Image (cartoon, rainbow, N blue to C red; front, top):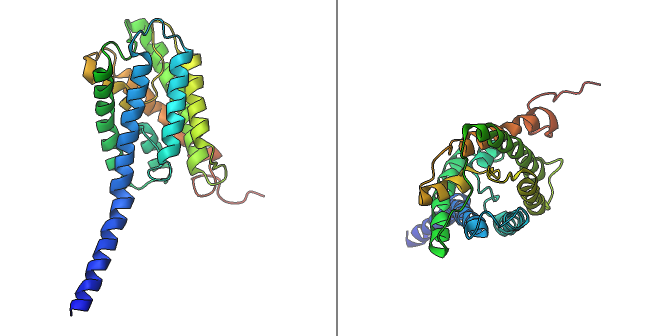
Length: 245
């Protein structure tokens, strides 16, 4: 009987460890990765937004994303972004039981990252929209660039036909391109990530036009439809699966 109890205990421990590695550990990786991405992004422009220029924050955001993605990609997939998690879930790359804690940890990580940045230095961690005229321009930038980076993530990390180990480099490069091309002085640099926007807003109290940084990335993440209908492999694609010729 004692031997059987010992075997049951060992099996139970193995199940607990497996559950930890399948759910808890990836969720913690998302929390830590999101926190450090927000922290690094904020600090890169926090001292002086006006004179930071485009290149400095672009390189910092892109390199930070590449490093963090490479570090935990084998643990959690390195989403760090609720719209990414939503898009990957819709493509079948992640189960709902994992998507929910991922998003929860990403939202917690955004607050921790912004709090770390606030402790590091005081000042604005982002530019803010000042008028209704700037809203459409900023919203378009959020939608277009989130669409692009969502396709990069899905085709580079989920789609078996185009999957590549260069995903950290590709995502980091896309973020650099985004910051250089879409940063409009006195308007907005596209955020592409509600978690990146909401943490600093919570710490600084700037909520004007904040909805842009949620609606834009969420709509942009519908770039998943392009992969699901046109560019994905047979497992990802929901249309045109039968041989035509």
